Amino acid sequence: MFISLIADYGTGDPAFTEVAQRLQMALPQAQLHLLSVPPFSTLATGFWIAQLGLNPGPKERLIYHNCAPRQDDPEARRDNEGEGLTYALLPNGVKVVGVNAGYTLSFIKHHAKVLHTVNVDRGGSQFRSRDVFPPAAAALANEDFKLLGELLTPEQIPDVPSDRVAWVDGYGNLKTTIPAHTIQLEPQTKVVIRVGDAVSDAVYSDGSFKVPEGTLAFAPGSSGWSAPGEAEPQRWMELFLRGGSAWERFGKPRLNQKITRIA
Image (tube, rainbow, N blue to C red; front, side, top):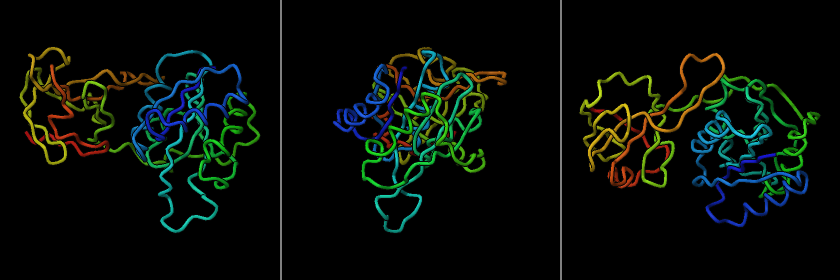
């Protein structure tokens, strides 16, 4: 089984190894692949759950995610209690197990064939993804569904926020939550983009490299997915500075920063 472990522990944090050990105790043949998102970034977590889960990959796949800001209740916590565990089954058979917090399930909520709470303790440890959740994740991966709880509906999960920075890749490209099909412009149209307090000219392109060196492109990016019943694949817009970093051009914006096209 191919397991994608998505969490906000931090790049290189030994917490990834601790959780991986617990998962492999129950799934000893699994291959684990780690993906670190920024602290408390449920938007990035949800984006990568969909990007990895809805695109082609090995037949036997589990996405185990943990980004739990414990923001569902502002009061003091009893026994480190936090947001509850959930299980989703995607149309291609990918199983998704993790905490329902913020936007973690927003990108897949309309794609999931099955979406349930999981009946495990919501407290018991500050490090629930290591100490509490792995046995439940392993049971669900092995199609033991005795722990499944209430059915969740898409209406119980927040929508993907529009016009936000969803991810910054290693080249400084800004992946956004702007659906590509909502942009109706002719190629080479000049636009003005604001990200937070920073503003820059850009050129709309139907392919990021169809702009000269040093030009900021506003173009459909490499991220997106197809799903049964959808006429066209979902694509997301990117801001791409050829030969440079769009992230630096816009003052190094944080994830979830608002993006506005002002001209």
